[in-house]
Image 1 (cartoon, rainbow, N blue to C red):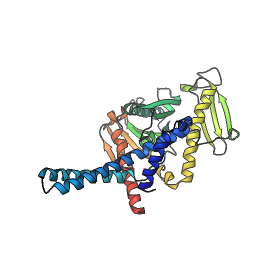
Image 2: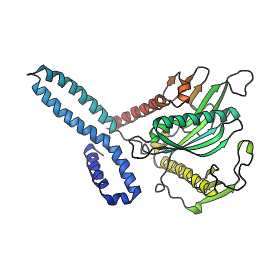
Image 3: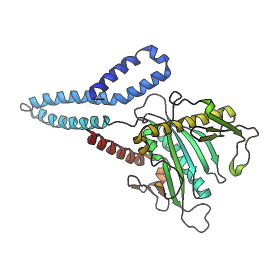
Length: 356
């Protein structure tokens, strides 16, 4: 789609959003609102570029009569170049999920109790990061370990109300993969540094209209919730395990007190996983982007290393390295995610230039 088509689409959506009848259908209004927010920076930049170009032409015509206009023309020329570069970036094809919220799952791997403790540290890091940005978080399901970590934990991360140009997926999609930690475990009496790992999987949260699930394709089992050490924490069969028979995907949830609530949360996770699977099968590019997502939590398959003795964090995909691990674990994750966002933009720009 060229620039003229995008501007025309923006005007059309603007008109439709002004129609009260459109807002009677909340799903339609939400979809139009998201698309409007995606197109807005493109249209605004295009309009500013046009007015800057007009001002530059006028300033150059008057530069011979007044030096002040010559200086203004220099500034306007730079502004015009900056706007052209910004527009070029905005026109690069986006990840279709960039406006979505996410379901983030953290699973302990090799390293036993130490790995579970590290999974808890990662959860805290993401919760603090979300808090800094202003995202809402909700722990959907969790299985604590004996020492206060997590065998696995699932959390929903949502942008707070309204329509935002940058969704949660834009930043958190790069967190998928194996995260390796190097430190002296609390269970280590000799002070030796150990290496363990936890796996993170991130999926865009699916809306009900995006994934239709046939109830006949589901096998639903109920059981009693368990806490650390496997002891029962509920006297009723409120925990739910759902198996989607056609795909083999299994989801369990035990955090809520009622069986119905656990079933709703499990279906929520299932929809997101099925959406991710469908997108991977339909789009080779999406599959390539997600190739770093965790398959097995093996120490050798790492995307990032957290080295406590050196206070160092390293992302092995883009060569990012910093010595502020304590701050990152407290939620200061912006520079890490920005390095990955920038690398993706460079790749998309290169692909766009190659195809043009």
